[in-house]
Image 1: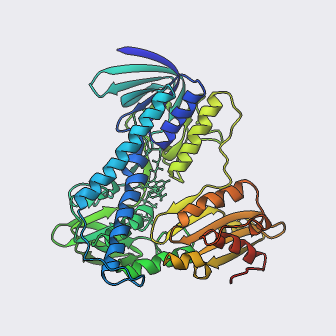
Image 2: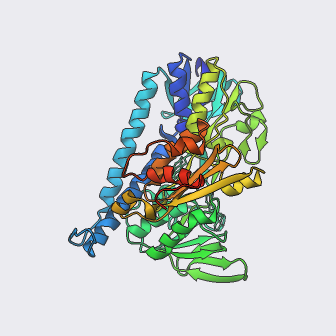
Image 3: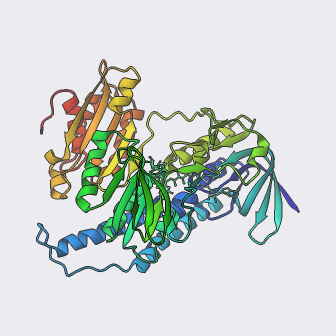
Length: 465
Ligand code: FAD
Ligand code: NAD
């Protein structure tokens, strides 16, 4: 067996692992990265990027259909069609460009990439089964675990055939006539809404009493309104008990202990993701766990010296930008820099229509933490740019400490608000106060003016509301 020795060995080439690799290479750390599937991991291959491509195509198609039905803007188009095979090819092209780019960046940084599955022998030794069946042993000083997560399967409805995981839903060979979505979280609503726009009859079954239950109700109300307006049928407070081809999905109304069946051609199960901690010898290290994920401290260190972990394998929030930031942080520490992973602002964006953004504390979270705070929301209905974009639903909300107006959090719901996440994150990380944002000149006409107006409103002097 071929043996190599390196300073840093990274398991997993997703956003966490590949960013750690690039940064380590830039810092001159001899680095080997092992990836069993495809560079870019879940995010680039079967997650963030392909889902946003499909969401965009669905949005464009719906827009064209609305215009064909007569648009207030005066645009008239013939009945639009969608060639879903071409949509999937276009999406795959974006994925290939990005994953190829990751390979190029790792090469440029001098990182050695091994394409194969890793098996941990001990905290300093890993065996890799390469694509050609050969094995290679890698000895390292530092081991970085970035093995990501996998979709949770329901025992009564294992993935396969008509039962889709998110990966299947991102590569459809046709648009199902009737799609049942189990789970009204990120994936269920992002993809459920996209399929509705592509023409499927969509029914969502959710165990909680609300859609997007991890966000507060004020924030998710516009999403609920949009779901209902678009004809998505919701069964909240329900769980699923199984599926058969003849009757469809067996649904149980939990509060009433009643069952009914929902006819379905395809069922998308999106009930969460689980850290990938088994199947590659991790158990042998006997690391401290926190429930199902690897426990880490503020340095991304595990309970074993020189074994680090980042990204989805370390639990919630399972977001690509968190994995990337942790990857960079670990590489810099191995290079000797004094770094900690303690962000004040971890943005979360749900790419529904309307989009939802949460950065920092909500009013409820701030009050629950015992902080006396003020909050104010500015509606897009009073924003000129939103009107010209036919996007006047939703609002921007700010939360600030009562005593000194330090900004603690931002939330927004509306079309295109994902792009406000940058301004939200910066103001919190830089310790901005309401006055800083209120006195910053925001370009007119932009959606960003609602950010300034929310700050002004919290100070009791909004100009346009
Ligand atoms: P991963 O991206 O899962 O990468 C882990 C890699 O490790 C994989 O490539 C895997 O093959 C490899 N690996 C595992 N074990 C081994 C082994 N033993 N040997 C070799 N290789 C191994 N997040 C966002 O922030 N924004 C979004 O819009 C968003 N959309 C999403 C949409 C969908 C449909 C899904 C499923 C997820 C989405 N996410 C989104 C979540 C995001 O994809 C993850 O948070 C992110 O990919 C985590 O990065 P990671 O590096 O921790 O793990
Ligand atoms: P999720 O945790 O966002 O939502 C799962 C939903 O399923 C919850 O609302 C839960 O109450 C419900 N549920 C659980 N068991 C159920 C059951 N048996 N019957 C009915 N409902 C049930 O999980 P997800 O949508 O699968 O996404 C997984 C993770 O991927 C997310 O937590 C997020 O970290 C990441 N993700 C992020 C984005 C983004 O950032 N835009 C997009 C997609 C995925």
